[in-house]
Image (cartoon, rainbow, N blue to C red; front, side, top):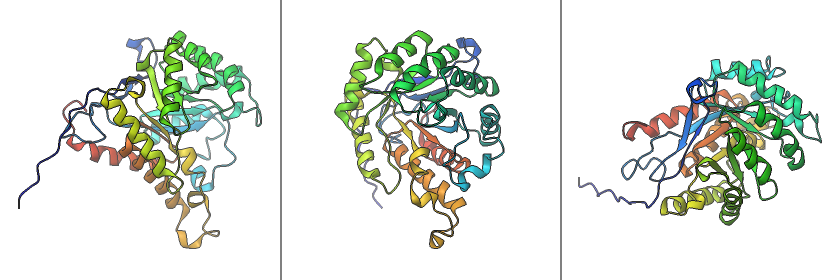
Length: 327
């Protein structure tokens, strides 16, 4: 049998490598660091470039017990959900993701409306409970996040956290805090390449280093417009490799929030008896969503269920089997 020759492409640029977390040698307290990006080829095209850093998997916790998570998602952590530090320790010790994502849902002014001081106290408690690098995600209300992040960023100074998110409307506060306290920043845009560039331009013009930015082009779950998001992510990655410095950053996917928001993951066995056990169905929907984005170029995915974390990491290990030394 004659094998067809491999088609190799030499790309003009390497995607920025962004390191999250700081060990004591770096001036922080983390037990390890995680570097994302740095690739010189499309995902897992080991035959035409290098992937020196494998895609990373973060697991999400919240600062208050979530009331909208289905039973299949709550079951593995139900006994620790009221204590973010204990929840974080459970995640690190039992589920072993690469990073920990703390979502400050309790600060939402339409919800618990927690204060900046309360948010900072949670961040410090989680920091002290675990050694994993930290992603800190705001509540999503721009005005409230602008109040909360100064306290949180200062409390975690020197830890090289990944803070999110900035947009065209709120980039000044978070970029200034990232610069002042040594953090990295997530730049969010609504599935549009030009808008992703615009947010990055604003951050860079504000003095924030482009090699400390991570792109978040928003996320859709499996079965809910995922094809369009994937096409945008692939175009972002191709643009960066071709030499466009405005999109030459790693990409993050906020998978758990989207995957567990759809009926296929949430429906109970009584509601959808033909869909199978939700304890298996939900994590599978989340893991499948994550792997699609990893193939499209996501360098970091944020998940919620420990089974999805395990499956995603196992798949990444298999996909990295052909990588060069140092991956």
